[in-house]
Amino acid sequence: MDFDLTQEQQMLKDSVSRYTKDAYNFESRRKIIESDTGVSPEVWSQISELGWLSIPFSQEQVGMGGSAVDLMVLMEGFGKGLVTEPFVSSALLFGGLLSQSNKNSAFTPLVERIISGDLHGSFAFLERQSRFEVFDIKTTATKKDDTFIINGEKTVVFNASNADKIIVLARTGGNQHDELGATLFLVDVNAEGIEKTTFRMMDGQQASNIKFNNVLVPVKDVVGHVDQAAILVKKVIDTAIVACSAEAVGIMEKLYTSTIEYSKIRKQFGVAIGSFQSLQHRMAEMYLEYEQAKSLLYRTVCSIDELDNDINKNILALKVMIGRAGQKICAEAIQIHGGMGVTDELDIGHYVKRLMMINTTFGDADYSQQKFSDLLLR
Image (cartoon, rainbow, N blue to C red):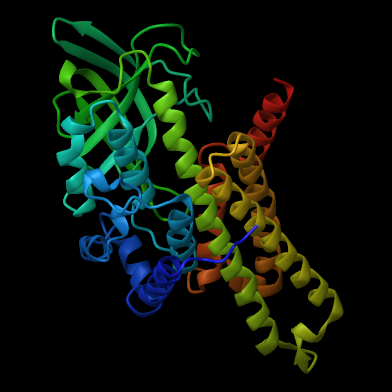
């Protein structure tokens, strides 16, 4: 299989690398994370001007119509640069649901605003009891005339504090755990009856818990079909899982290369610790874990672009590999760096925290392993 990038993809890779090196260094990233909003309007505008927000969207929606490989290249670069801007939550999840719905023409203006950087969005799908089960839904949407009335609570809603609009997954039919009966609603973040509580996650990014108290949503703001959100949600979340996995691979590369460089300059007993054979073996294992994760990422994005029958298996296997390999690489990076590895002054700890967050987003390795096993038994 040919893993070479096209000329355009190589140009994208180079441009992301230059940007994260010259305009988005570690210190500037720390200032953004520590700000009240946790994001930078200037950086978001620059990402839009560079055309990166257009990659996930079709050319009919004024997008680039990028492939899974294009998205992988972008997100791997974001991982290396530890970019904290809400690309996944705003463009892939929120924007993906709008662009993939049956009402493309109605939502196209919103998609265009996402691409231009004028609109932030978020996807509210998790609840307190649901853990990783997306369709464990207690939030209800009751129809009355030409309006739905939403009641319930959503937790860990990424980018909700900066979002202009939110897509809410609510139950319009079926039982609590049924996929059938779930519906998506486009809601203005300032709608009457919405109560937000915002907090910081361990990687510095902001998330919110949102309560919906008799929030009114007109029928025209249903995203997709009533009771049939499952197919659309699964497709968009799968895309986000692959994107986050590519980001994780970029982080893994940064962790192992930084650890090798550190081992060359850190001295113990008068010699560089990189000369110790035991540490050489451990760094070699870090490299092997990274390469295996990278190889499975390549297999997954190729299967997506080629519409392979094993797409679902590959995505679940990739999620398991990212979780397992990420945990090992994080542990070794911190061990070899010593106490410095967990300080805020050194970037290693920030990369580790972000990688740990990726592992728990959309299901950790253990959860994904069980899902993979269940898929094989079907």
